[in-house]
Length: 446
Image (spheres, rainbow, N blue to C red):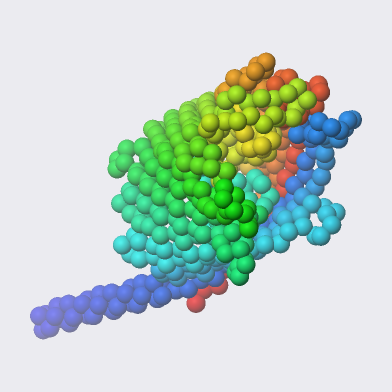
């Protein structure tokens, strides 16, 4: 009798265990087959006022002063299931009171398939971001931001990431003009990029290698000889390292550019950067760093501010290409956002230091200082461009709403005035305020 009791108990236990296993397997299978649609929105209001800088040398008075309000609206939809992702983001950007109601475009539109082995392929319009975003980044501070029409494929797994990015741009389905490309959504006609990143196991160290081959449209439509339509290729090769033991973070990078620009001029340019950051506590962080971007030599600049045309054997001014420039060279965006006349650049030396304070989980304060100087020597001009001071504050009102504001002051030099047409007193001021609302996503599952 007792044996029958124990046998029955054993059979009951086996059946119960099997049923739980079956239910668990069913739940896992259902989870694998689960599909989701997420809806998101971003509303940004941005206002700024500035006094001095980037004015026209032919004007007088306060022509280089400006005050305006802008807005950005994004509506996005994401589709998720195992092995497949897709996103569509519509974006509208405009200045309050602008004629034509601003610009409406498709900011992102892509689909991505992936496998358990780590292989993936992505096709469409993508906001690319790599490493510290110095070379490739969305530059989200700019209201329109950046995205690229690309095919991206690669592998991610076991500490390794390898991406291949291919792009080919055209103005329209041309029946006239062949493959001539000008004034398109991107400055480049073709792009071939290889990116590899490795995170060292059990060590706070990551390193990346980047190679880009960018084709630029040269010549004129209908031109002959030297001016016949053609594609000139320029290359970028370099790497990025991030070492972050405990409270210390060290970032360093080096990149070199070569090849030819669209006018067939040879390119020989380079840049390097170093940044050290230390967290004294969860509320106090300090950092310092130095950026060096090579510049063109024998850059003739008459005192009136008009840059003279000088024959250069090579282009030595480094171009950060498609990076998030606002993050690196001072918040006033005098460098690598606005360009110099004729495309030449005297380069930049950027020595900086700053601190970030987080008194509460909702409040964040940032203070920074930049010493700016040219990387090359120009005739009868000192290399120092000026001293830039930036203050930022951001406060999270609630999970979906945040407000931020900032003020920048630059004490410029005569060199800054002549190169960038700064105001006569070389005192440049800029203030801004921004409100961002990101309503919670609505998630549909089935």
